Amino acid sequence: MANTCPPGQVGESRARPRVSQRIWRSALIVDLVRRRRYRAKKMLSVPQSEAGANSSARIASPTPPTPLRAYYDALFAAYGPQHWWPGRSAFEVIVGAILTQNTSWNNVESAIRNLRREKVLTPRAMESVSLARLARLIRSSGYFRQKAKKLKCFVHFLRAEYGGSLTRMFRTPTAALREALLSVHGIGPETADSILLYAGAHPVFVVDAYTRRLLDRHELAMPAQSYEEIRRLFEESLPSDAPLYNEFHALIVRTGKEYCHTRNPGCSECPLHSFLPARDSG
Ligand code: SF4
Image (cartoon, rainbow, N blue to C red; front, side):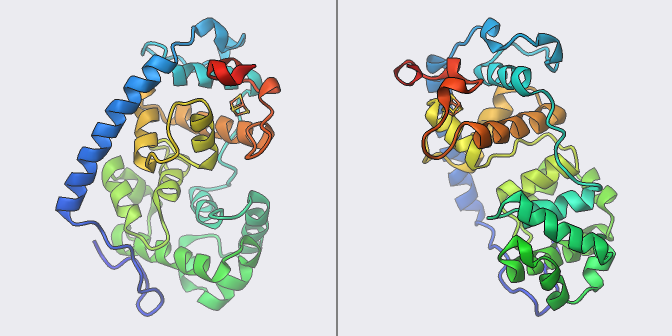
């Protein structure tokens, strides 16, 4: 793997774990996932009839119903398609995925408008623009100096590894591309998975704070569970289907914004109310 940052700009690429560490972590994850699946099975065996009336809108699947599938059906019946991710091109989606770290989407939209107006919203243009100018253009997204470096690192990586072609990049098998993206400065699991799913239509589930809160409150996962465990919970419970993952994550975000607030969640009005564990559903 080539150096993922332009020389002299960022010297803080994430160190990859040693092989022995990776094996140890994998074993731990498998063990935790087994325990969690056992617990989830016990907690939830929700009949499909509770999953909402709009069954014709469900994505067909040959796999048997799972609790998470029923959650999806209930949310889709309540909200319909969310049309994610808002972006005019794959590159714009990638830029949005990086800029939305630690900020609201409204702030990102303004930064993307600036980049489009100044014709910097292509990999080649973003490589050419100075770091200082790029930072100025994305100022509204917060942490703009760090994010400008992250964008520079991504376009450098794209050119070094794939000749600047997103088509070539997204042709890479999912696991290998995920690993490669995680080696780029500023791209963590949530951003990598957003890029894979929303820009490249690779079937990986995106886990964010809304997802964690919902699973925690429904006792499907514990706060201490890792990103990878929760991602695998979804990917092992659902068919490997990028449109399904795309829609489900968008529906979870909508639920989080409308009902599942950090404080005072609006459970009684929420489409997932019937799925709450008994002690919380009153
Ligand atoms: S608002 Fe309540 S019912 Fe809705 S997802 Fe959150 S915890 Fe569940």
